[in-house]
Length: 94
Image (cartoon, rainbow, N blue to C red; front, side, top):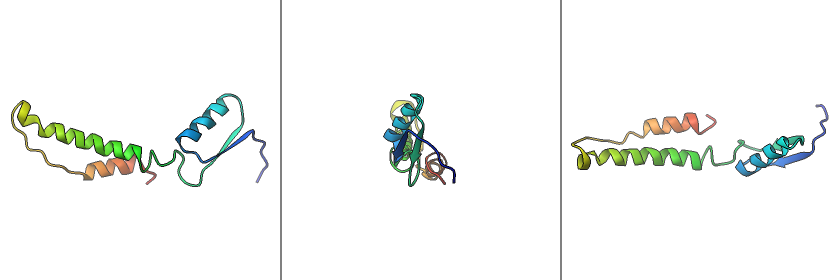
């Protein structure tokens, strides 16, 4: 292992600390980020992003169910497998 000189060590790389590390690096400091799990914290992997994907799908389903009120008839059913697949691809490390 080689020794490195760094100006700042950022412990935990959630969204807030990731932003701080980026700003410090842009200011010319040498920055090292340390994270025990996934960089970005819970939001991209477990919380905000997957939740928003599910909410968007539910909103689209709700709008589709209103078609009969607005412009005719439609049969709509929920198939959450594609939503779950999209979450696995876009919002997790799997």
